[in-house]
Amino acid sequence: MVYLTGDTHGDIDRFKHGKLRWLGKRDTVVVLGDFSMGHGPQTNAILQQLRGKIYLIEGNHDRYLKDKNFDATRFKWVKPYAEMGDHKRKVVLCHYPVFCYNGQYKVDEQGNPKTYMLYGHVHDTFDEVLIQKFQQITRESERKMMHSEQMAPIPCNMINCFCMYSDYVPLTLDECIENDK
Image (cartoon, rainbow, N blue to C red):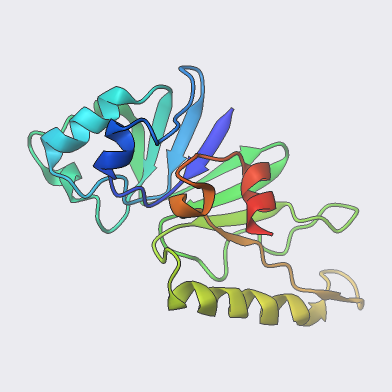
C-alpha cells in the first residue's frame, strides 16, 4: 500500500514517544518534503526507527540531504517532483502547490477526477486559505471540453498533505481525498 504525508519536520517528540504511527515493512510512504529539520545524524536516527519503503519529495527544509554525515540510502529516491499511478489515477507530487498541474483536466466517463495534485509546504497558513479560494474559483469556472462545444466545470483536485491534518498518520490517496473534504 502507498501512503502519503508531508512536513513532519522530524518532530522528535512524536517519534520518541511513539505518537507517530508509521506503517509495516511492506508499505510505501511518500513524504512530500520537509521530513526533518535536524542535521544528518539526527535524521539518520529518525529514519532507522521507521519501517517500510520511504520516498522523499525534497522540501525547502530538507537541508540534512547535503550533510556529509547523512545516509540517504534509507530513501528509495529523493526528487523535487514526481508522478505516480494509484488505481488508474495519476498523482502529481511536489512539496510546493502546483496550480496548473499535469493531467488536471482529465476525468473518467462519470466525470470523476483522474488526476490529483498533492503538496505540502504551506501547512495550515493563510497561503492554504488562498489555495482553497483558487480551487473554489477554478471549480466554479467552465470551459469548452476538448473536441466538443459542451461547457464543463474545470477540475481542480489539489490536496495539502500536511501531517497535522491527519494527526501525523500517513494516509492512502483515498484517505487523503476523504480527509480533504
